[in-house]
Image (cartoon, one colour):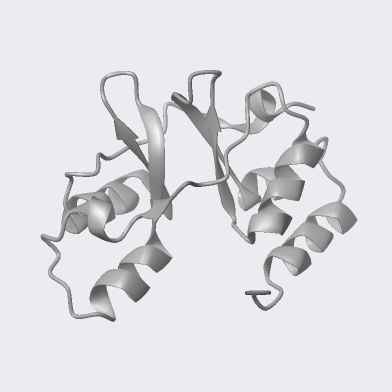
Length: 144
């Protein structure tokens, strides 16, 4: 199975100049915990904004909801390509300890998102044991 078979297509995206409030509203409105941060009409991925980024880098630091996304986003996110095998996506999640992976084309344009839940909900992509292994590995304490 390939990433394109599981990904959410046309995910909600924000820009570096969007506010944290706007990103949080997108997450609420689209029922997601991660929004790709893109530049230009081509939607080239330059980062991701996660619910954790908002909690730890904005709220916990006393920053305003009007803070630009660029100030708290996660830069250089690990991405995959539509034709990547699901096993490669799992490996990205494990190595980067992330639960969501942007799917980009050859020009780094955002074409989708894959979440840990996508792996769990699709029985063909991974067995329960595989999903459990991925969740366990993602959740290990940071090695930094």
